[in-house]
Length: 144
Image 1 (tube, rainbow, N blue to C red):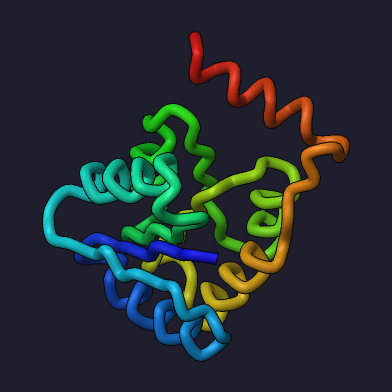
Image 2 (cartoon, rainbow, N blue to C red):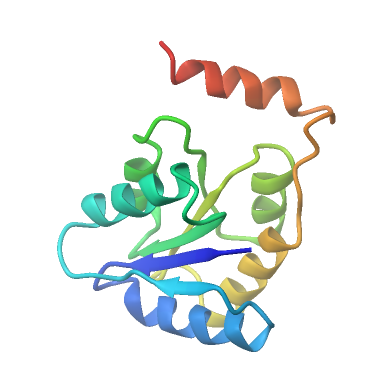
């Protein structure tokens, strides 16, 4: 699995911690795409890379996680979810097939952030499961 991870100036310290954690957990295809500038541009850039298949999943961080979530969701075909607990992370994958999760570096601490990312990466969407029709309905919204 190829993972992108990125943050703005507020999120970058958490990004560095998560990058180290993921590498230590056996994920070797991780790219830190953090950059200076507007979080909206950063989130849209990463979301487009996920949409185009360069990355399977991505983790975005800013101060609250809200700005990068809103920005990533502006890209058609992307489902980004704000996650501040492990249950939301699990449901982001299993119920919503989210390719991107977002975290607030000023909202969650490093240990919780690691647990959130671990739960999300270990959870899978079932395309034949009970949430498949809801995800299809979400996808159709991109066409309206």
